[in-house]
Image (tube, rainbow, N blue to C red):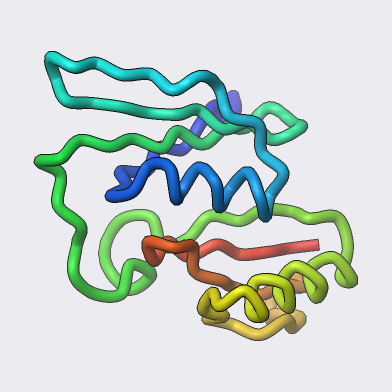
Length: 128
């Protein structure tokens, strides 16, 4: 078994697609639109097998509060390949104005990671 994809409801579909394509080198599929349901989505693929589905529907509201501190998915982790790449991507995101929730460090369970926030507040662990 494996995780095939992770789905995120988003408010700004194009902004979120551009974020993941720009900073994580993900490849988007052609935008899917169902006018009857007012639903649109993109599947974004890493070089590996896992994908992210970004979904938008105007009647889905954004939760107020800290997304990493409520029941449900607290974060997802993306392996970027090395400690240097964790540091580089963290600094690039910081310089581009994104929130750094956790500075690069080795955690108690042995991961070297930082935690960043995407444009809509989802927490992403950057790991080596």
